[in-house]
Structure formats: structure tokens, C-alpha cells
Length: 70
Image 1 (cartoon, one colour):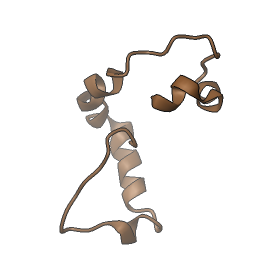
Image 2: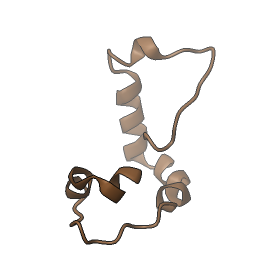
Image 3: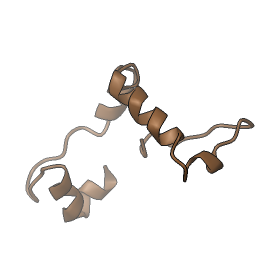
Image 4: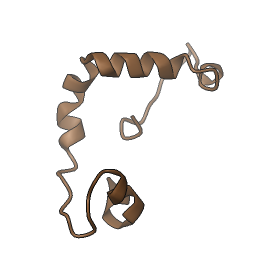
């Protein structure tokens, strides 16, 4: 969301023109449970966690994630 304030490439990527207002930053947070309960999220996370470059980075000892990156 921060990048959308000043990076034109990010705006272009999500379909915003330079003058378009941004949506509310809490939209993702408010919809997180609904998104996580969906089939697309499950498929995405399964493929991501089984990716050959990601698998070696995983640990059973601890877990942390930045929700903004998802």
C-alpha cells in the first residue's frame, strides 16, 4: 500500500491512474478471514510452501509471516 502512494508502476499494475484515489488500507485486514477461508488461498499457499526454493526456508521450530507480503 505504501508503494501505491508514490510508485507509478505499482499503480499501473493494480489498474490505477496517477490521479485515482487509493482504497482504504484496512481492506486487506478486514477481509483476511474471508480470504483465508477460500479455495484460492489454500491452493496458493499449498503451491507456495511446496515450491523447491521455498521448502528449504521452512522450519517446524517457529513461524512468522508479514501479512502485507501475502
